[in-house]
Image: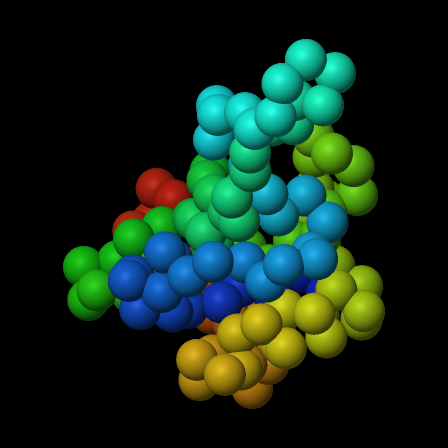
Length: 121
């Protein structure tokens, strides 16, 4: 078992919380542009938590909470399943103000206890 595989359980409405500015790959194009000609720049916005995490590793539970995999971004197009200590510190910094810091995270076994049996890893 990889001790670095952790899951967070947050109220489902927290999934719409914007990712902090400066986090790699935390913006998304809006489809709009500013400027003219060579000075034209794509307008972006901060992703919300639901857009930033792995959708296939996220489950909305009947009790109004959502369980998702804490993962780290290693390239512009993918994240790895599992994180190092620096990644966990980043997640803790982001989630702690909302009451969902490191001391509330779930192991894989704890996460699987919450899910319907067909969704276990």
